[in-house]
Length: 192
Length: 192
DNA sequence: TTTATTTACTAACGTTCGTTAGCCAAAGAT
DNA sequence: ATCTTTGGCTAACGAACGTTAGTAAATAAA
Image (cartoon, rainbow over all chains, first blue to last red; front, side, top):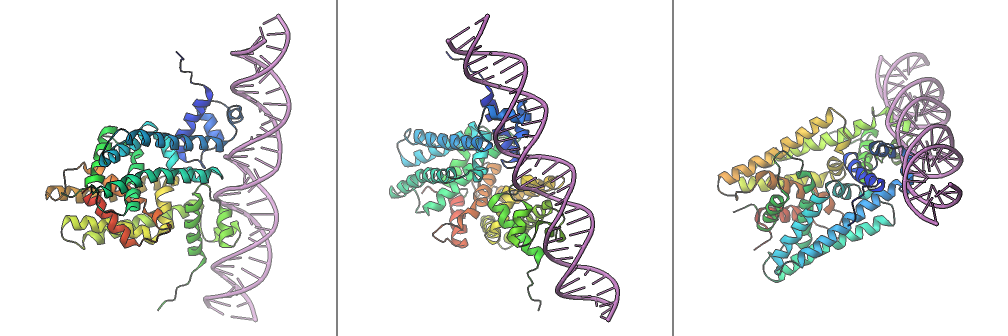
């Protein structure tokens, strides 16, 4: 059984997520990062190639997690409505388990350089497509209203993507409560 | 009748909104800004006190517009459900009329310095409170479901705040279509 | 035990940052 | 016609940026 060894590299990564979230990628200097880790800025380069590399790792790691979670979610349910609900919960789950990194994913991806930037955008589009497919199916099955699919997915994803903001509030909402409330609201609306 | 004179100051402001949106506040230099305006960086300081001042103006101008639009919206309708719908449309309207500035408002406010940062957060909270009050009222009037009010408002505002992203897409959605679709989805849900 | 690798350090590089100082020409006011 | 204000300019300031070079100590491999 391998013991968990928190090495420097992962310590740097963890700290980078925290600082990129708090101050933004562009406003976080390598000296800031080094100081928080407890070493000199130059020493960082024994563990990584560039500042940009850190951002890449964070963004694509989270992207991967979203894909994985979606895949698991929709194969866990039979009917479309439940699949959608499961996908929503899975999405919220990824965010909840990566509060710093997902914030960076959402706000700092613009600082990716080509060709990664294009690759990133494509992945996002592809991920959203999964949700569009679900809604398309739900409409065909006459379970969903005939909504504008793109707008509906846009609305859903936008609401979900902001949930990282919910975990610092005073009344501690659990991930389950958040997921249940939001998915209900989006599926059934606020009106009686 | 006064003719519109597009002076340097407002030209700088307009360009700042554009660049802060495209590259982010921290990654936009005063030299970038000057170049886009067509003057030297030092010349900017004949028209403004600091880079920070530009961000302040943008953020608080938009905040003011949100308040104003909300106030007008809810006084234009009688019943709570229609008030909420009007407020949603008004919110989307402010964004649609300030595509660059509202993006800056949403993403770059973290770079505000105290005491403006605190003032800004307070204004946001106060604005959201207007929506919470509406939903509270709707529930009391038994027109809305007994949702978690904070979560519901969070979901609504989050979905609305992303709408700046919708206007660059290929199929040209009008502001009216967007507002109608999203407010319907949030009020009535996607499920039949 | 010797050798090789890893990881920290100090010093410094070239660049860019926001901003100020001082100057000069054009425009407006008297 | 003279004076004042406005709004450009060039030059430069000190500070901070990402990153590299070179070195020494600790650790791992042989």
